[in-house]
Length: 301
Image (cartoon, rainbow, N blue to C red; front, top):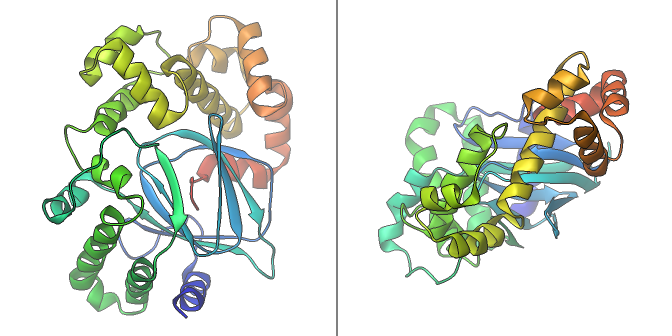
């Protein structure tokens, strides 16, 4: 079966850092479960071959396991944890970074786009045609001479299977320059780039080319949060990344991510991560595995 071969290929070629010899192709192998880890999703296709994972986006929770795939069409602040993984049966996943320009190339031949703004995360069962293409792409790792010619063709096939599949609306909108999802992605990127600065929602709405009411509605549909809540999640995740990376200067970190009040920062940090920043920083310093998870986590993998 294709899923059995996918497990074997992923297990054989998994390396630290998840990178492979094929551009934009990632492989994950995790041999234990753990607590939820905050991360930015990136735009990615993730196919699970073994094990299971849970992703939380705002108040939405996505559970997916072997034989299922997840698409993240916008770079979102999420938390993820493996719910099935062990040394004898590690969680194994394939990832493909989604490039809007590559998706745009297949859109002229795709069905007409559905109306509405899709969620930034979607999960479905992996159809046999998509699974077969993923397996053929991974086989190229063992035939490096074929990668420059065949990898782009198989990647294009995978994108075609996505845009014509059950969750095609989310992937199609990623490739459209004037889609509502693309406009929201532009606002999301602005918040990520300027997370430490205050902003007016009306300004973001203008950046997205929408009225304030339409912007709120579409932003909530894609991200499951309000723009202000989204900014707070970005600030807190960045703060935790800084605390994991070096000595814990709590006051300096809080200011660098945009907080004027240390007490407010500590309160919101504890609410988000379950411990005040000083305790969390000490735990991360003592637990190298947890620290590495914070520094390198990817959403679907």
